[in-house]
Figure (cartoon, rainbow, N blue to C red):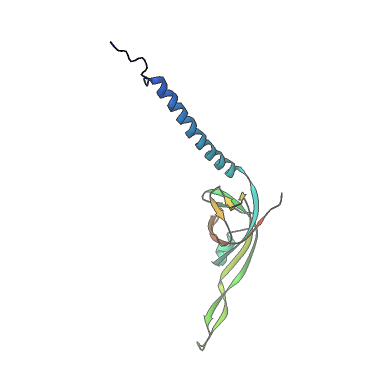
Length: 161
């Protein structure tokens, strides 16, 4: 009679050890990805952004004041620091129709100002809420307690400190 003493058998303990090793590898990968995300959103760099909003009426401008808190995606975006309104200029045809000339539209205004914001300044740019890039030319739809406003970012100045 022959015996199979040299044969190895796969048992439940071997299966558990292999599963623990796989779980450790997966856990290490996910942990590093999650820590990158958490450290990315937890920093609090601050900056001032200059903005422009066009085609606003007198009533719309009256609803927004310096000191108002603005939100983006239901999260606090920043605080309005300054506002300036100017009558909007438009390009229209001259009376004889031979050329285009500038005219002042007294019904609509251009609003410029600054907002103090918090976010994360990385080598890839300034981010709000860890995934919304804040850059020159970016259009944002913001809400205050009294109004909604669509702005275009014209300048970003990182605060020192």
